[in-house]
Amino acid sequence: MKKGNLGLAVTTEAREFEESTVCGIFGCILKSGEAAPIVHVALKRLEYRGYDSVGTATLHENKLFIKKDSGKIDEVHALHNLDDLPGRIGIGHTRWATHGAPYQVNAHPHTDCDEQIAVVHNGIIENFAELKMELEERGHTFRSKTDTEVISHLIEEKLREGLTLVEAVRETVKRLDGSYAIAVVSVKEPDKIVCARKESPLVVGIAENAVYCASDIPAFLPMTNRSVIVQDGEIVVLSDERYEIRKILDWTQVTREPEHIDWSPELAEKQGYPHFMLKEIHEQPLCLRNTLRLQDQFLELMTTFLDRAGEVFLVACGTSYHACLAASYMFSKLALLATHPVIASEFVEQHGKSVNIDSTLLVVSQSGETADTLAAVECARLRAATVLGLTNVVGSTLTRVARVYVCQQSGPEIGVAATKTFTSQLSVLSQLALRLAKKRGKISHVEIENLEEKLEQIPDIVERIIQTQEEKVKQLAKKYRDKQCFFFLGRGISSAVALEDRLKLMEIAYVPSIAYPAGESKHGPISLIEPGFPVIFICPKDDTHKTIVGNIMEMKARGASIIVVVEKGDEEIKSLADDYIEIETGLPEVLSPIPYVIPLQLFAYYMAIERKCDPDMPRNLAKSVTVK
Ligand code: AGP
Image (cartoon, rainbow, N blue to C red; front, side, top):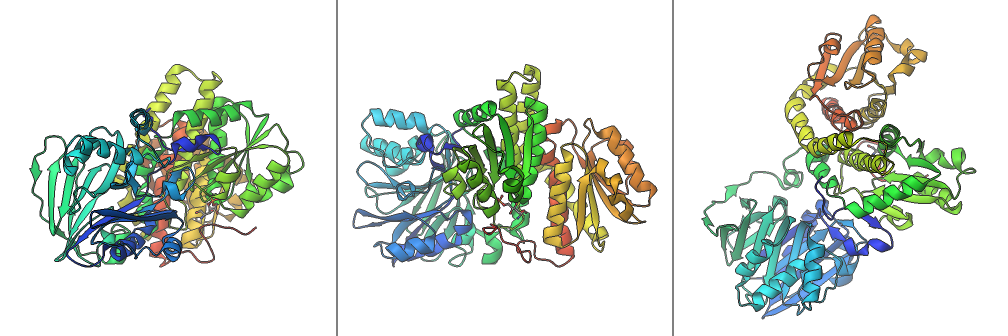
C-alpha cells in the first residue's frame, strides 16, 4: 500500500506532521496597480477549497511583504488588512489544514531562511520529513511544521548555487515526491512568478493588463475568461503579460493557446457542476486516494489503543453513525473485535453510567463539532475513558479533546448532505480494522494482501461506477420521481448502506423512506407493501446473498417494484428485479459499502433534481449541528 505523510495526528506528539492538502493558491502580475487587493478577492473566490488560514506575499522595490494568519479570510482581513501590501506582483493562499492545528506560523506563504523567497503550495510533499532533516543538517532554520516549507529552502540553496529562479524551481521539484501546485516569487528576480504542477490543479489566466495563476478558474474569472490549463510535469513562468510553459523533464517548450471559458463565476466555483453535492460525489475517487496516504505510524498508534481497549464504542450522528455501523462489521469480521456502534445523542443515557477507564470511544464526526457527539465525548472523558477521533476538520473541538485523532483528508464538503466524507470515513475505518486484524493475528497473509490490493483499487472502481452508472441512475430517478415512499433493505454490512441511502433520499429529496436490515422487514414493516411500492435492495455477492434472495421474493410476491444494486452478472437477482444497477465483481464484503453507496447517492441527487429540491441546501438542516 502506498504510504505518505497525510492524515493522522496525536494531539500532543504529532506536531511534526502538520501539512495541508486541499487549499487554494493564486498569483498575479499586473501591468499597473496594486496586487494585494486582487489577491484578496481571488482568495475569497477560492475559499470553498479551504478557509482556516490565509496569506499574501507581494514584491515591491526588491522587497518581500507578507501578511498571513489563521482564521477565515474576512477575519484575517479585519485584523491585518490584506489589501495593504505594496507592489504589482503577488501570490496568496487559502488553507484547509488536513493535519495539525491551523496556526499563523503554518499559514502560507512560506519563506526561506533570509525571507527572500515566498512559496504557496497546494498538495502533499510525501518525502518532506527526509528533506527537512537534510536541510536542517545543512543549517536551514524552519519556522513552520508544514511540508511546504522544504520547497522554499530547497529553492534558496539552488539560488545560492547561482541558478536562475526558474532553474532553481525545476531542480527543487525534481526532488519532491507527492503532489503540488506551487507559485514562487523571489526578490532576486522580482518581475516574475514561477509555477509548477504535479497532481494538483493549476490554471493560468491571460488578460489585457495582467497574468494570473490559480488552483481554479473562478479565482480570475471576473477579470478574464481566457485560460490555459497547466498539465502535470510542467513549469510556467509568468512575467509582464506573458506566460512560458516548459516540461520539467526535458525542458522542451510547450505551446498552448488560451481557451475561452464560458462558465458563469457561480458555475465555475462548482467546476462546472450544477451543485456542490454532485461535484462532491464526483470527487470521491480523489478523496479515497488521499485516504490511502495516511501516515503509518499514527494509524498504528490508533490501532494499539483499540487493541488495548476493554470495550470499544463507535460513536457518531447521522451519516457518520452509518460509517460506524459499517465499521462494527469490519472490526468483527476482520479483527474479531466486538464493538458497540452508538448514536451519539443516546450515548449518555445508554452508557453514561457504565463507561469507564477501560472503555475506548472511537468518535466519528466530519465536522468535529456536532453537539451530540461532543456531549458523548465529554461524558466519556469525565469517566476516564479513552477518546479517539476521526474527523475531516483539523482544529475542530474533536481534534482538541481526542487522545489521538485521524484526519480523513476529504477537503471541505459544502453540500449539506455528506457524500465524499462518508466514503472516506469508510476507507479509514476499514484500514484500522485491517491493521487491528494484522496486529491480533486474526487474518491470513493472503487475505491481508488481497484486502490491501482491493483497497488500492477502490478509487478506480468508484470512478468507473460513476462513469458507467450515472446515466442509468438519472433515468431511474425520472421513472420513480413521483413515488411517495421507498424501502431500503440490505443484510449484514449492507444494512448500513441501506440506512445511509435512505437518509440521503429523505434529507435532500424529501421522500419519506424506511430502511431496515432486510431480515427485520418481515417483522412488521412489510405490511406497508402494496403493488408498485418501490423497494431498493443492496445486494453484493457476500454470505448474505442467499437469504436476501428470499427477502426479495417476499417483497415481490406482494407486488413491490424491486430495484437492486447487484454485482455484475448476478443473473439470479437481476431476474427478480424491475430495475438494477450493476457494480463490478470481486469486491471483499468489508469494502463493499464504499462502491455500493455511490449509485444511491446519485439516485438521491437526481431525485432531488426531478422533484425541484435544492440538494445543496435542504430545508431545516445545517451542515454542522451544534445544538443538542
Ligand atoms: C448527512 O448527510 C447529514 N448532513 C448529517 O446526518 C451528518 O452526517 C450529521 O449531522 C453528523 O455530522 P458530523 O459528521 O459532522 O458529526
